[in-house]
Image (cartoon, rainbow over the protein chains, first blue to last red):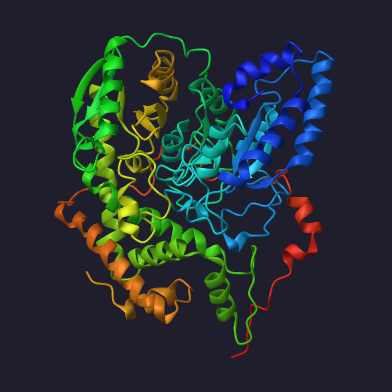
Length: 481
Length: 93
């Protein structure tokens, strides 16, 4: 059995019919990991013992005819910046190399209650800062479609695990595209929910006003199932929305005829790869064929998005990462002379290059004399961008764009030039600044056989519509358009 | 605006980071390019625009009730003595 060809709902049905046991599947998962992971390196750590324990417990329950949870026995992978009690949570950083948190994140807690089995923690850019997973403090993860290419990031390990069939569903986190970009580069589905939809309790903070946990999977339905399981109010997160967890799976089949889809003209300018553009145009035609109405719209402040994002995200990061001082978490370097020396040595040896660069930029943007010129200004532009979207959603229901201007690029291609790396995030970061939900779905491959991703965005808390519109695309053959 | 090597030293001090001498030049160049890029925001007229520090989608209670509630792990944490072993954080002048 190859998990690449099966989805969670089908797997649960096989368990139910006693065609397969959970233990067999978990055994298969670890065999696959042993076989494929030395090449792609999606996993930071594995939790074999606990996974097998849970599998056996689940098999006993199923054999006894007890009712099954919606994701019973489904193997999942968790990005290594989301906590699971007593399991190392490194965030891809040397500073947390041996950190085992004393609590489990709400999202993982809820997935476990839904029956899912965690097989391991996945590699990511250090503290989720990156677009390729090359900034991991431990090792580089590779794209299973071409081992010389990046998998995208920062949730690269999660996307690669799903694409390689070593988990059916994975959790990632998305601060500026960190779920959607790797989903696009690895040919899987990646969903970034509305800000506040999923509790951030247990998600190690990068930029608190932008961070959001979400699922990656091979199908839209699995993303809907996962979001149903993990969303809803949580009093451990003060920004958690008090909106009830939505019913998503049941309404996937409802028709989408007449849905108004906006095409923002600012997303189809220079820098967009010709083949990616052609694929996205094919997606538009497919939606027209499904009876949707396409409209050109304008999001006029798009060209300011990267500048705005990299000021806000780094400012928040510089503040969030101040907690890594050698006293409370992980690494502590020895110092002879003073406490300050211990702080500085710990942070110097524990943080990688990109994290330091962002802390410096964020500290600069917040420092006396520059706060008004940089940070405050960015917050005001964010207001303008939010208004752009509000205006757009008066005219359309969904916005359709490419997820990334290009397909997966070569490992090492952009590491020397941070600004050009930041510019590759252009299509994904606007959504985080506005707190909106979005999804990247596969829409075929280019001439080099590399996956292309289409992004759909919806208004706040409109995940039900978003997933429906994506599901109909998948059903109509859009994934191989 | 150009970021100088002494700016890097100053910001590094604020951020409690060490920056090696050979890194200073590269960082000053990279951050200068980024800062010059973000200065495109100066083209916009932002008078009368309110800042958005967070997109508030719904906040039931930004501050929860001050009640003791069970929380995973907290009781175990207090048993694990090494979690609370910290270096000396008070120094003599």
